[in-house]
Length: 225
Image 1 (spheres, rainbow, N blue to C red):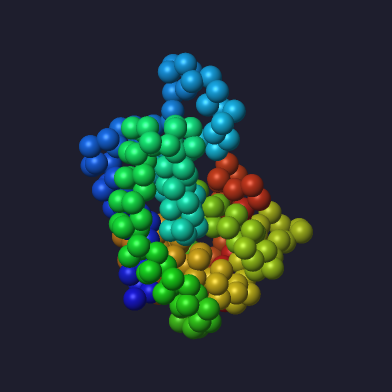
Image 2: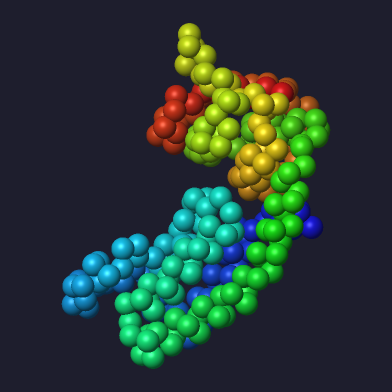
């Protein structure tokens, strides 16, 4: 059950595909062109604009940590529309319909995520930590930088910065259970074949230089478990 839930980015992409196929989806597909439409009060009323195209871009860029975060941005699209347009107007009614359709399609994803949150509390096994370490060797440099940023925010104690060397060492054993499940899913989603399996007999530790443009930290790292 948790294995299926781990594919929430694909599930949310399917939800967006469903919404895009709706007859009036073009209304929400791109940012509101308030200047071109002469809606000069729009920025004063809508403080956090959102559209389905932006949601999809953020999803593809792995900017959401959970399906619920993605869902909140989608809900913001309908909420903005209903805030700016008068209750009972055509646009208001369309947003209401889209909101109901979305919640129906999102419900199974939300249930899977709730089950997964229980799984997140289970401490990872030694084998899971070893596979995670091996999988680090197969992700791209940009994704490595994103991983280090995630760890720096969620579990900074697992990052051991060497003062005399330009590198960061990841202590896999120091990653708490919830953070491990989070970053393990991220790494598996980044694998070229999305298999989530380590191949061959790769060594358990390895140093790599991460692209400085993809990480706010000096990002060379070593995985250790």
